Image 1 (tube, one colour):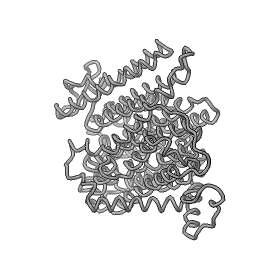
Image 2 (cartoon, rainbow, N blue to C red):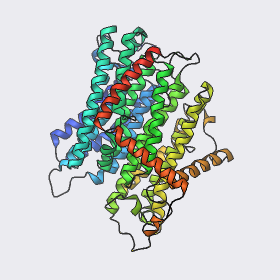
Image 3 (tube, rainbow, N blue to C red):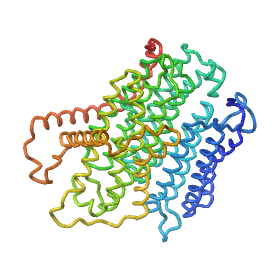
Image 4 (tube, rainbow, N blue to C red):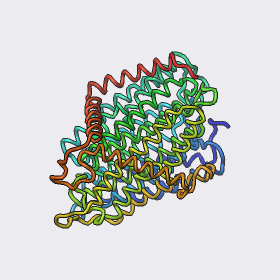
Length: 585
């Protein structure tokens, strides 16, 4: 298959990239309340383009290619869409439409004013993020990918500080500075590759690159830089304050979509550009960081007092899942990474996380809008007042647990099969244990929301029905994602959810989650708020609390600038060493 020759439907790729940027420029020109109308006009068109690309890819049965100006690489630039890119284009288009429906209430321009700064900025930035992500997915060379990644960063940073408070401005500045550190490392790696091989086009570079000093150094630098942008533990210095402090519609964009850009680029580097340079040891380190993210992120999430911060730390944990696929994607000889069940599982995990995490942030935003706060201890009665919102939050959480037929279930099954097939049993423990952690913070919120309110009836402000519908829609999509994936995947992968084995697995995950919530939650889970909360704790509870406090202290330590900067450079050096001395088994 020629990847330097344009295909019939290749122009759709250029249209998918240009549409959001054209919409953004039109919004700037028209100004005022017109920008929201432009965004709403672009959303169905963008979704239709993503569906058209999917149909064309299925019909042609090959990677779609568009050559800019008709010039083939290395002289020209090519846009390409393989299965990974097509899936991400479609998922992002769907999530953007869902978030757009939700944001209509939060970022509508009031009728009495001509233009609202926050609304004007939000819709422009949403389209900029969408266009930058589409460019990340279809870029065919590493420099265009760098440009796309920078566009994504500079569109994502202002979303953090839309509220304009000092706290959110500090969070945005922290995000931008650390992301720029990651950009410098990525750019250094790209320069090394261009100097060594004379091209940055992915297929040409993949054929030329050899496991030597240049490739290993470049891969180590670029990997560390992309981990900083993805906020993989311990490089998550910017994520909790940025995602926890932004408006809910912006947090949904940042958590569900923005971090996927750098993760996708890392996937390209490891699987498509330098699969023969990667070593088994370096892949173990990458997944090991993912496992640490799952444990520390989940424990700290269970210790949060605010719902949005709980969801933000759950993102820290869920990012870890995206990296468990790398050591499981080696071929049977253990010498190179290949596209297969593990990479498909990782992709499904990313799509499932995008839909579910957007729904969770949107639900948290609705709770805040209704109550005027998001304190978990004071959510008693909210399940009766906002049943659709709480249902959406729980469904999204269940989807992330990996319960059949969610996309995360299918992803987990593919990864578990890969772990069994490769004899890497330790990743099986991480995959199964992580589901219990996810169940823990869902149980924590659900118990608080279902608690009977003994005092005065709860008073809530009315929330947008459209926003509730959009939140529920994304949660249901995440829960039913496995059914949509059954087209290209074997049907036997999805089991009957009522089968005894599946029921037992689900029950064990929920029981494990409940025990974790009982042990790690800051306030006793089953005690009523007030004096009863001061009841003496048992030994197990005290031990769990000590673990929780230790994880919180570790989180505070690694999120200091000094530690994060040293950690970034240390990881680059460590990856370089493991790429040099590590050998496949």
